[in-house]
Amino acid sequence: MNTFGRNFTFTSFGESHGEAVGGVIDGVPARFKIDFESIRHDLERRAGKHTILPHSARADHEIDEIEWLSGIQDGMTLGTPIAFLIRNSNQRPQDYEHLKEVFREGHADWVYEQKYGIRDYRGGGRASARETVARVVAGNIAKQILQQKGVTIEAELVQIGEQTNPALFADYLQEMQQQGDSIGGIIQCRVRGLEVGTGEPIFDKLQARLAYAILSINACKGFDYGSGFEGVAKKGSEINGFSGGIIGGISDGTDIIFRCVFKPTPTTPLSLQKLGITAPIRSDVCVAVRAVPIVEAMTALVLVDYQLFR
Image 1: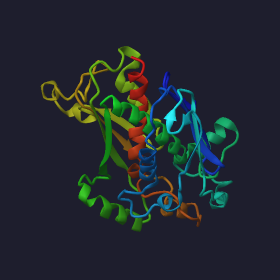
Image 2 (image 1 turned 60 degrees about the vertical axis):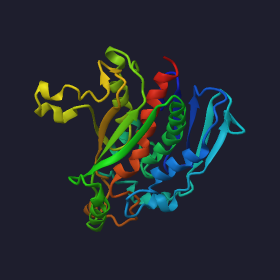
Image 3 (image 1 turned 180 degrees about the horizontal axis):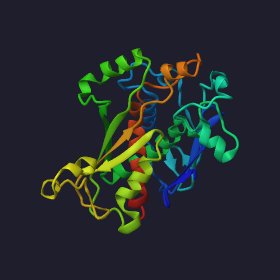
């Protein structure tokens, strides 16, 4: 399934080392003025700029210029589907020639081959995090719509490995890179200004929709909200009030707070050495760093789908 949402919908397309990636957004109100600078800033965050990464191949080489194909005129939405694409200016399929006959551990290569009988070995194709660039574009537009309604979304990296002190994150990542290894991280997201009543009982609970969206992000391995997993060690009298802004699947008017965990990057210099491969490394030491704007984007897509059609 390549389409997200029910009323405000987003469909993504493209492979990581194909000609382009992009998307189609349907359900954006007419006469909405787009802040293109805000979109550009979120794309830069996703590429690794303005972050604590010691070095990011994406930040150096990914130049994400958007080509708007439909749905916008003079910076204003027409109320029709918005189609856009971002050309893969840093295509380097030759960097992946060594993977034609090799399945990378921890990647989707093998299961894609088993399911479809074919795979795009050039950086993972649709399974690559390159696909998320289109999510950031669509999600930023959703964030702009929500901001007009007084709703803001802000995610931040709160833990890398066992390190919880943000002041030490950069040094910790530098150490991991020098070791030729990678590390996972935890992102916390806070939604402010969401009024009471967003969400539905039973199967369409707000937390269920959020978890569905967040867990669809590459390398995301867990989601919790409110007291979350830590609440299992507490008594009922101790966790009352730690609802995370959601009760019975419906927003209660307080800040919504959830966390999500991202695994370490599976492809590292150490992992390639085990396979006897010497090749350029294009992955980051901690994918959670660049996932922050993606978490915001997917959260916005969930909330705008509710808010526009309540």
